[in-house]
Length: 266
Image 1 (cartoon, rainbow, N blue to C red):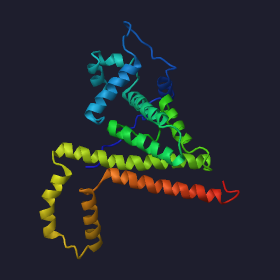
Image 2: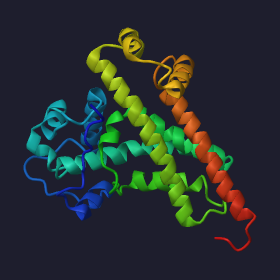
Image 3: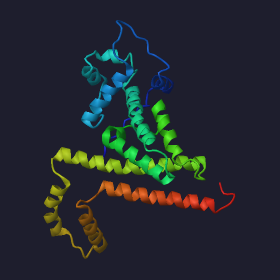
Image 4: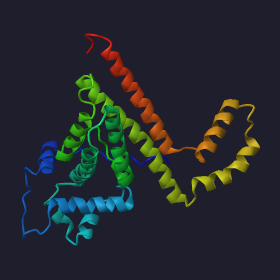
């Protein structure tokens, strides 16, 4: 089974109200006794539950309320819906990327893109559930926008146009997200089956040897054996992450050099 279906936090929700909630410019009406919690505490509790489960399938307003020892309905005085909660959770953990980017210092744009890639990879490894949230309509909260701004700064002043800068950051995100999904999906399979990749290969190899003729698939046999020996597994996400990032940076370097030697090109 592939990765779990993405949750779409925007569906059926009021985007204006969501933005106001994320920026703290609008408070929901509250009835009854004075509340002791803050919106940040509710979001933090939800993040902790999602981290513990490593997915969002069982995350509900009821579970969050139980973890805070309050009634479920009281949470709706902080966040209007589960969808808004998901957006707030995503914006909250984006602050970790901002901190990592700011701590990285200022170096070459190549180092900057590596920092962007590593910060996003680390985010997915800490919070795998982030990959289950559809971000085609991103949470336009303060940390999401700060994250985008810090990432763009890494390649500002490189002769790239603004549109190309946006495209490069999107390309880095796409690469990191794709490899991270494979890594997280593989980890889920190990937890679900209780069998490591090495154990799985030990079991499957005798059966495969009975039906697989290397002479019929010579390239697959040769390359598969070489990769398997190098990685001691069918796939090495960390190697794929580094290899792909190197090729990506080389491509951006080529684009920048082409623009530098082509007067008048924008």
